[in-house]
Image 1 (cartoon, one colour):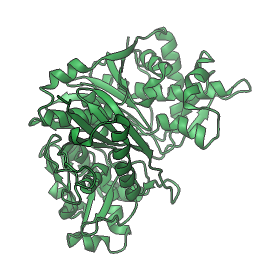
Image 2: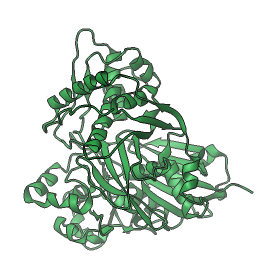
Image 3: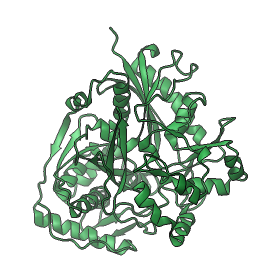
Image 4: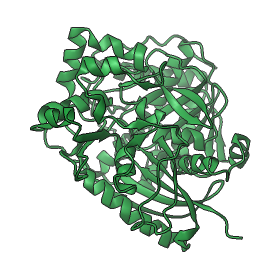
Length: 503
């Protein structure tokens, strides 16, 4: 009997990847395509939604060819995508009315500032678990309504649809039959009420966002229609839609309350499972992790805007010779950064500081500083930002002793060791780093009855390496104090005083 396969579509921040998954967690084929960002003005970031869809269609074919399987063996499809980015399109033609506004873009800063000064900004956190920040989707929706000619009038007539990337891909996969999302994606928009588990009608009215443009919210393992026949002739069901960080969390089997994972991608995201109730930690946001088999699970989250992107910028914009395969060798070539600290606030700083006015800085450069020191400082910055979030959780009373890591950056042994050393945690690196695609595949498999229960997901997970703290506590405190000093020069908000150490 042929093993049922799941097709998982993962729309990341900088690339679109489709995988063929043999459950529970074996990727047997994949294809990837890049979707470049546009920067029409300083601080702005946009992407072409049509290019995102073309990449999806192309990688579906590529993944099936890579796996060498009969498309008819695809039992179901799961979608996961980066969050907060907003697409707006014409319901009749399916054509975008403007480029998508990407999560990192600062083109909505004036809208957010207006909400703050008017008192509207204070309503977001208690209602949605998020902050009044340009990062989230609400301001992007308002920006599109107010800046695309005729958009607001068309939206009020019901002619337009909006959605995060998952919603846009679902619309195209089903040939315009389904305009829907799931609670994990919806809960990152600043328009979704966590207590009501629904769009916040009152908040949308305050912001001037017509409810008619919003997608229907279905369970993460709900029925999202079927793939259109010209893509896959047997029209397999789409049985998972989930936000990328939450998908990674599911793929990492972080089901127990207090379980922590960090994904090192373009951005970096630390999430902790909070169980059946949302919990607000200082400096972090609260969102839905998933709704699977009728149960809603919540998460607290700390976002690092610039993680792996820091190394990409060094390579692509600064033209430094730091090819991905050489990063560890360069950084290991020196025992430390030689006192150099790189604070990668290229688009401001997110959790736990939330200072969008911050700009990047490099401190401590001397005549002895080498390329190796700069690369080491860049890798260390990825770890220090994890430590900032972990320390905030500890200040809030949560014990953090273990962390699972995934994403492309987690392939670096040095980065994993630095996280263990500086955060004082046991780090487990998953045997398969692409847990995001696997999470969506596992949810789809669960919905189709191909996965018996969450215990089966947990049993299939394993680590390929584990890292324990090696440096002394005094050394750790010295390094972290240097990071805090560098932060203090960069942020417009005050950093926390280093209050002792966590052993």
